[in-house]
Image 1: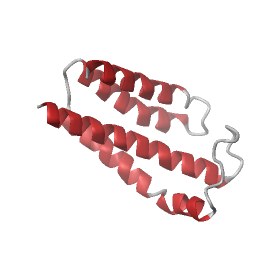
Image 2: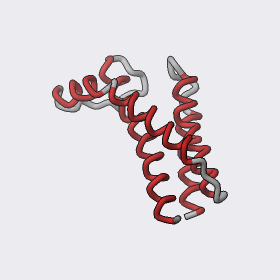
Image 3: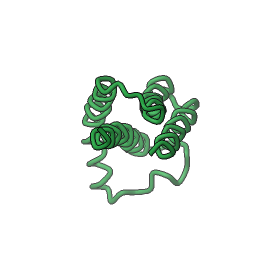
Image 4: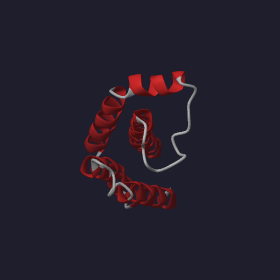
Amino acid sequence: MKITYWVLSLVFVLFAAVQYNDPDPVQWILLYSGPAVFYGMAALGRQYRPAIWLWLAVSAGWALTYVPDFWHWLQMGTPSIVETMKAEKPYVELTREFLGLCIAAAGCGWLLKRRALEG
């Protein structure tokens, strides 16, 4: 599992790194940095579960605020959100943000589950 944890840590570091040109980079860099640190700590055999639970709660709660926008995108027939990196239409940015929050929450949830199974 150590290799998996290191790989996932690197993936979240890369997610954080590409946020530098976002209109609101600080919050997104912080969002992705949390799981990056948590996976790095897990690879080292350390874990601070309360922090992971907090990150999961914040990510999931924040994602819930985007559910109406995500639902609207689904009702539109799921037009492409990846044609261009520039979010020219509001649904593109809002859907991407919703999915990013879900990825961060899922990363925390998976780590909690894996670590619980490992003991």
